[in-house]
Amino acid sequence: MFQFKLVLLGDSSVGKSSIVYRFVKNSFDEFRESTIGAAFLSQTIKVKESDDGEETVIKFEIWDTAGQERYKSLAPMYYRNANAALVVYDVTQQDSLVKAQSWVNELKNKVGDDDLVICLVGNKVDLCDEDAEDNKRAVGTEEARSYANEQNLLFYEVSAKTGLNVQQIFQSIGEKLFET
Ligand code: GTP
Ligand code: MG
Image (cartoon, rainbow, N blue to C red):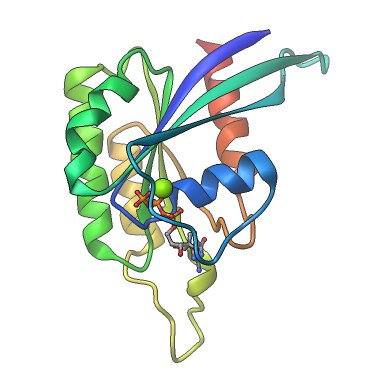
């Protein structure tokens, strides 16, 4: 079995813990408490090893960091030696994308992107409905996608609440890690 260390980074309340809980326990909590320090969870998935359909099990050791500013200095402890990083923003908060971009810069400076698979994740797409009067989207899909392409990041828009695309994040990271 292959083991990979994965870290989540991003502003407070963008939904990092909610994404992890959806992935690991397939559950969602409207009133999740803000993470203190960091939390550790693990989960295994199967990835296709070759075109003939052979599958390999990989285990993610997941460090869910706290986004509050006072914990910022702890982050290097968690992204050091990481194989993958989810850099999460909230599609309804433009500021959270700016924060995500600064995490991407820090990762590239401190870890280097040869060794690290980075996935940019826009969460809370359930709050977006282009046709509704109360559409809460503040960050356009194409804006984020073109930034991700420029920086050579994987990119997903997801909802921890509905589960949309959450499994796919980890699946595509797993495949990418397995390629390298
Ligand atoms: P810190 O631990 O402080 O860094 O925050 P976090 O990034 O872990 O955020 P958390 O998962 O605690 O979620 C913050 C709030 O957003 C909670 O009230 C969640 O219920 C809510 N939330 C998370 N994901 C979603 C989502 O996909 N859709 C909606 N509508 N709300 C979400
Ligand atoms: Mg949290």
